[in-house]
Length: 165
Image 1 (cartoon, rainbow, N blue to C red):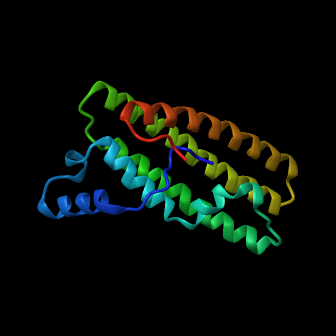
Image 2 (tube, rainbow, N blue to C red):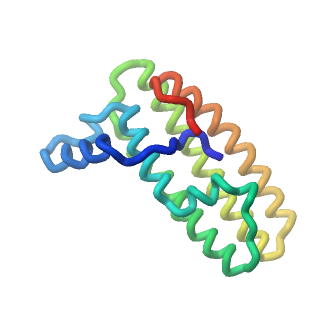
């Protein structure tokens, strides 16, 4: 659903950033924006709510308890996405293209995180029997997702990353 988040393994980039932190220098200063994005994408994908977001069209919620569990997963995903935004914002971009790509990615990921938060709000509204509010929240999810996809696609191009999923 959110194309700014790629399907990759944590791999050497995260390990190198972790080892860099042990050695002293800030991982943000030793890591390119693209490397940091790939690392944060992998971390975000490890959240249980990430798989749910990718399967929304096939999702069946049979009880309020199941919806509440999903809301907790979406809230955790939302927080992890905001953390990723914070990490990427802290990376020192060295070229104008990298700075533009970083800005686009941060803006797109912020929109995507907002979409996840709106989805959790829509589920809460459904549980509470507020169909009108749920419908409004779902429309917000769609607009946030579209904005996120445009921004992250632009960032991918500027940073030389493969197109999102």
